[in-house]
Amino acid sequence: MALAALAVLAVSALSAPTATAAEGWQPVGSDRARPLDESQGLASVERDGQTTFRYTGVGTIDPALAVQGWNHIGDPGAGDGYYVEPYQRDDRGAKLYRVEAPDGSRANYTHELESWEAPNNSFAAVSPDARWLVTGEWGTMDRLLVLPMPGVAMTDPDANLPYASSIQLDRPVRDVQGCDFVSATSLLCSSDDPEGSLFGTTKPLLQVDLSAPVGDEDVTGTVTSHGQLPLESACSGEFETEGVDYDERDGTLRVVVLSPGVCLVSDSKTWRLQRG
View (cartoon, rainbow, N blue to C red):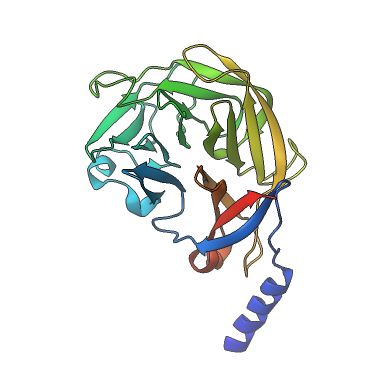
């Protein structure tokens, strides 16, 4: 049995893909991503001149929220010292955004779904002016949603966090797991697209260039692909790309990629990429 298992692992390793380089972005290193508490995404939070990285995963779900039915946490976002975690639940009741202010205080804001809105709450991206929050839905979509930034533009946790506007994409995207602002008019997004029909490759790194900064009126977004994100594991099979973070200090893009099969626990990675 041991020899058979070793043989299977050897074949898997030989057939496993090695890291690819998204066009214009070169891998400069990686860190192991723990599947329990680093599997959904990350955000770099800057406060008092110090930067910390906050990860999310099933193990980071607030127990007080879990007992209320909030059973999924997505890719977090951060800006101007604020940190935002997006939550969803199995019913169509609402979406929730857990906000931590620069002073460490926390508040929960709920967003009641529009009639046309999907219940998935994949990510939160804070605009550079910290006035708006961009969020996304699972599936094949031609939009990203814009809400007032909870805790900044919207300060009453007991009131509904309303829909403000949308980013109308010039072409569809599929299974976007995370986005982060690079500038006021540009975002980088990770797609977990398993098909590859939209951009010619599976698991692409996408760029969305906006016609204007986000606000209370719709803007258009031009989508381009930088190619496939790094996929590297001792196992072959279906990878899952997760959330992203763009670190303005040195231009490093971080993206979580979960490994297939049993290698999920051993060699899932947070890749570090820089413009090449």
